[in-house]
Image (cartoon, rainbow, N blue to C red; front, top):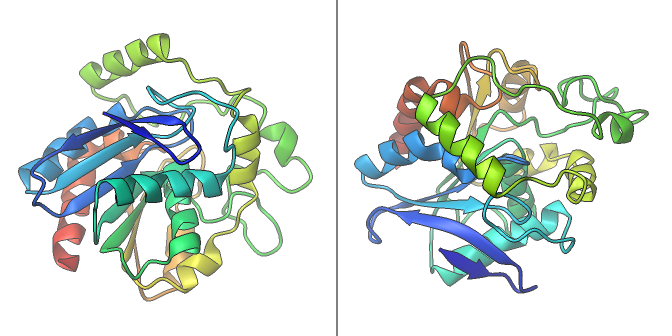
Length: 263
């Protein structure tokens, strides 16, 4: 499905499940494709949730553009789609940059209108310094601009489902990600610090880290638990950065238990 933002950028999204069911809105990581969430979507729909799965601007089947290359604009895109679809009280779930987009959304619009948030392997602060040692790899304020221009390396710890892998490879061929075009957005994303957003949350937050993530030390999630009573942290063994597709059965079980617990 297609949606035009207020700055006239075409976004692609999928809408699964019954319109009357509670809603989960999903955002993927930078350079990723919404199809990574196939098994999670199936589990949610089977358990009577409606799922809105979104390709961010400059990703997947959405429009590739030099407009709005900042995390606040991504958050506005999410908000505008929510308003268009007249969705109330959603759960917002994001992997990597998708989770940061959700924190940006909360910083702009608050969290009292949300049922909950799920962060899949995204530290609230990307850059390591004297206040935080659990950012992206070992980047610091001295080298982050150069380091982020280099290839990130493999995101996964173990192989993903063959069918999903083949689908993603075809999407990469048909809708290639332009890292150079989107680099200003990556820098904007990387320089944010969402810890204060977590401190003031008005809704539950589940953080699911990959025990073997090549990008983030999973201890970041436990530290986030100390920031707010709203936070629940869990780590999935034998999973890298793409927890939801590397260990989909375990992820889906833990995610559904939490979702059903918060009501």
